[in-house]
Length: 406
Image (cartoon, rainbow, N blue to C red):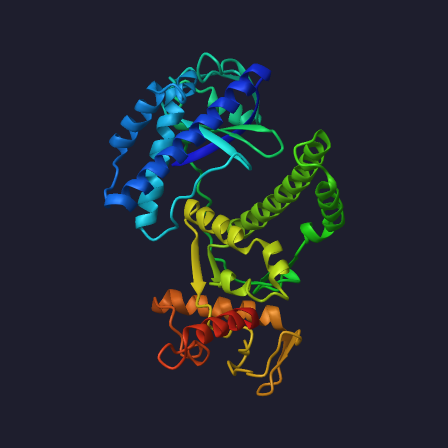
């Protein structure tokens, strides 16, 4: 299994200057190649291949005004062309068109596996002559693994964050110890007040990392707006703001990983609602709260960790009325609103927390999907918008409302 080991590196001033040149040249090559391909297609509908791009960059090195490309290692420049070629393949598969890179934000370069097996020695790494004996820090377990004689790695990526920290990500062939199977199944309802509500009645509160630090963020943003752009005070304030954002991001990621690990350690089958987060963000009253939750990141982590550990992840259709359906008798309460935090069934008299009720319904529907093998639901069809009788705008509006209520 391919897994990345990410460590922090500490280059000296000379090495930092060389890395800045590498970042800039790689970005320059990527943008030049993208502009070349884009212009060629717009003018005479020709598709420039990777070999043609490589020759184009070689010719750029011979020109006087772009001869600075000779000052850096050629491998990261070639990797930029491969990244662009891969970005175009993703575009033809339905993803977004490649974008031009800028110097702001995270910078990264990548080396392939031609560095040799001895590029790591103890706690030092050597990528080339200019980037030799760079000290790195990591856990003792990763340190022992990286110093193995039979280490097989695929690529090495160097990145620089907005807070001027340097990291090295090494993609290696690594065995993963799969968790033992069990018979537990669980349903999960994701909310705003409480992030995770399970069908077992366990509730994980939303820590609201952004709102907790909102005063600090607002103060730093106001201070930054008053500074002259490019001045020393501007750069110091920008760095302080970037560090605070980085801290919040690290807290959120740590929290999400811990919660996902707990779920996959305890359960073999996990049932989750297929939420339309993009549609939910169109509700301006709840957009900030939904963005703070990082629901897409939670799903992404859950998906690949379930795949690693042979866990079954079942997605329930987003139009399934999990909150409106009684988990006891199955009747649907059409007049349920977001302000109703208790589900009181008029048919059987059941009174239960609406989120726990939704989690139980998601669990039951997920079990049904596993048995039947389809996500279609007769009860879900009552809410699903019919395209033949509604316009596109009306369909999107209903989809957003349905996701929020359910």
